[in-house]
Length: 187
Image: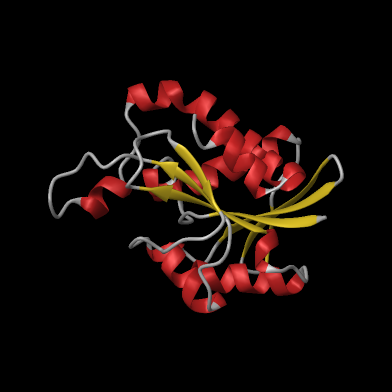
């Protein structure tokens, strides 16, 4: 079985380490776990890896967050995959920092990357792994918050949260979304 794992983020040094780029951070960790590297290809950086009998095409779109759907559509078509074999890793303001939730579908919830993917694919019926980044910002400061760096306290917790994220992605590919949700979403 083959899967397309997409970490959402923005390209460019100024965005590295920001809350909005947690999708890139997670898929970097996933690639590191298999000792594979990303190569620049059409619409993004791609790494290929195996987890037991599952083949993973791991993508970091280079289209910027708001146009992520173009990259997702291209790679789904190129790899001839249905949306059920897509997993989008995304930051989520509505979850406390480090909370991880896998869902089989859902609304974009105001997230421009998810909104664009939904528009381009014509559906919100695709799996996603939501990584909580918290919501500690004052009214009107949401953009500043998502483009800010994590706190020192959050960074201390990051290695364990990264490991859990990678474990969830591997479980999704090997055991399926329902078992993964039952095993991990309550933690």
